[in-house]
Length: 231
Image 1: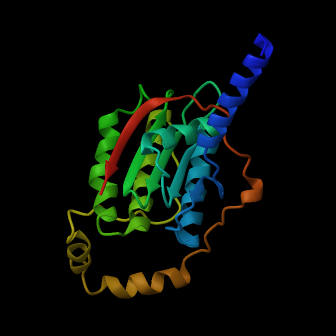
Image 2: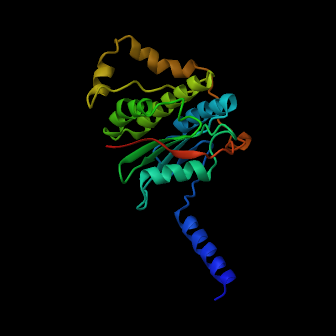
Image 3: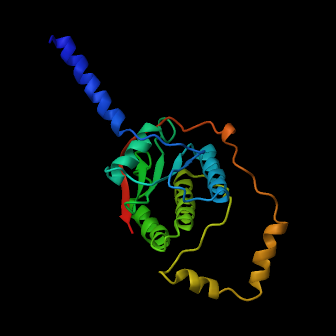
């Protein structure tokens, strides 16, 4: 076999390996809920909030849930998503991946290289350990994803110098396994009628229109900065 044939064979093998490891997701806006953990209402609220973040800062924060990592590490999959979908604005590389893998009970917050010097890993760990994982440990994934996403949006918006309009309600922080029940019991009796009646008279929420979504920014610079956790 001549040198040209050897070269073409090596290129083909490399391409095959890359293709085998590449992950394909079905995004609805900024969310790829492959594990079906989110309701339509929550997905819409998060998408509207994430869309506002992108419009004002160029930052792409994607929320991904997977049934399984299929033998890969949560770190590799998160980096693969960030690079493959070119998250973050060109030149700014201010993308972020919030990944949850259900079967392995693992999660990862991966930030683009443009955010590495703006958001400390300790800040991400705090959000993960104090705001997300307590909900995951109760198998309340939707509330954990809601709270985690809103806090990550706030964190990115702050370092990018913008104010993001949040749609939807952010679940409160849990203090532990009994945090939810203690929080509910702390509400005064007169608050419950208001909570029940208010949605009836509230203005109709805006819906995320995926047809108007222009896609991700085209950055894709990810160097492996972030934090991982399990529950």
